[in-house]
Length: 242
Image (cartoon, rainbow, N blue to C red; front, side, top):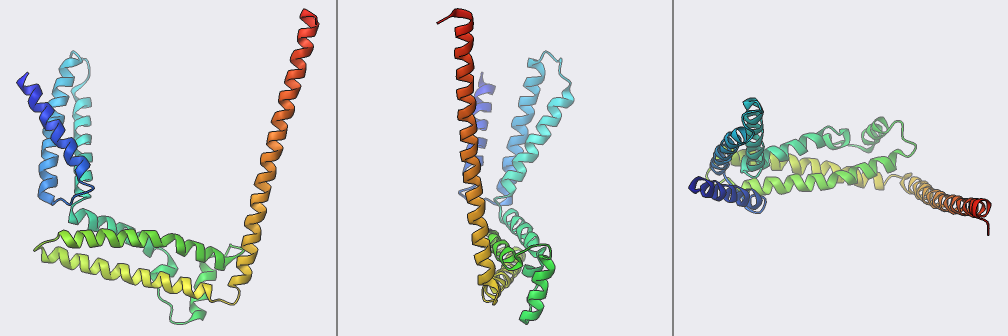
């Protein structure tokens, strides 16, 4: 009974820790302690589960489940440490850097629009496609900057980690600057408004087509319902009379 109470207290502590991590910053030591407690709790649970199953389930099943749970807890806790947040920010920045217009800064418009037409070669409206894509990347940059800012606020006296935060922040600002410059250049292109008008007409046409399809579908369903109702009345009249 006493062991069960201890297990329940440990479980509550782990749950509270997991749900409070998104709101509060933690250090790697806290993540290690939390993972250790989770591993202990998981081991106890696996041991009890093995005997509750009357030893019919292979121990490897419980062992694998325990390892997987412990690893998941560590990954979750680590993601809210300064190192974890910085690692996530770097992942987003790496994804952004894959885009040619984000990765590079073009000194003149000729080189920039050559890159635009190279990236969006198969698009009918390359300026609109590039603009929409660049706009969609802004939330990712802002989120990465937020992660870096939170990580920097947690580093304390860790000068090496602070240098990594500063480098990541500088990189994020550079990518954001490239995106902002690219958006401005696209909007200022002489063909942008013409392509935008075509795009708006296309959207309006798509919306109208979707509406017409919905109306046609509704009419078809009504016709089928009326047909079914007429058939039912005919069958009733045939077998049971009026």
